[in-house]
Image (cartoon, rainbow, N blue to C red; front, side, top):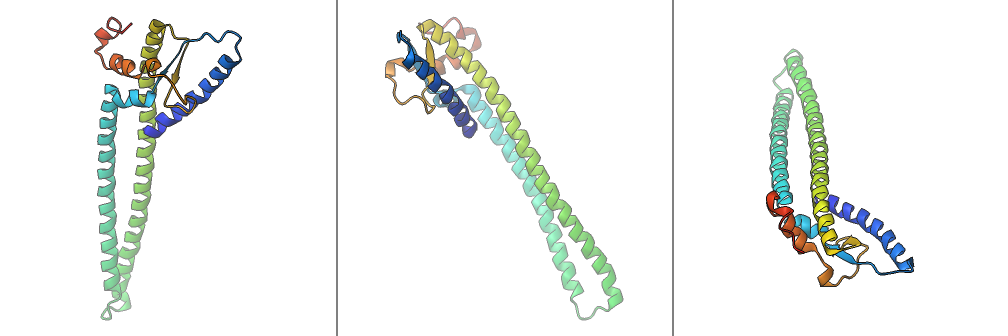
Length: 198
């Protein structure tokens, strides 16, 4: 999840780098610029914490399922080894070996199918979890951005930059809204619009 947040930060940084260029080239540089550390905000956002816990549970469930399938695969390998030992027995004639060879071939096919099943399961689960994470992140950042926009309007800000992105190298602490955004985002919904700092 942190990688997705970093990618979002990079994208925002590129966008705001162009905003900074516009400001630098402006003849009237009287702009009010604040910053927010979006990585810190999200780390402290209660919905982000809940999502991380939920994804940890889903990941553990998927790992348990993979382990169960791996054990089934190990059981097939043990069966193959046992059949090979029988096949290599000196006491068996050619007719006695035929059913063992048939069973051995079937076990080999089952092992191959199990390998494909495990790989497909892993891929499907990874894809599914990635899609869910992206959907959750998108929803959460939409909410956080709305809080930031409201706070920015109250502060009379012209721009709010993500200080966790690559475009912001320095900011005065008094222009950092990170803690205020965390407080607002973690308030009950009924208090969010009425209880914002001015």
